[in-house]
Image (cartoon, rainbow, N blue to C red; front, side, top):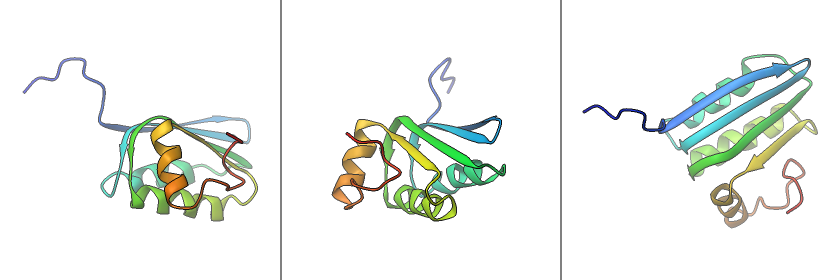
Length: 104
């Protein structure tokens, strides 16, 4: 079936700006895609990492685990920009007050 120009279900695109790595994630982050998101954020050495999840529409426990692993890998230098759905999931999981989340 041709989906034409339908948006991808998932993508994780990493860009570097000096020592800052920005990973823009779109679509659904779940058990099948969370490791791809994680690997995109670990692919390049970086002093600071921004994980842009503002276009994420679904976020499950595997995705939470990947973000927590990134927070451990980049202590004090990870920033997560969540979508409304991601914010809700992180709050339910008890992670709403993490230092890697911008103040709401």
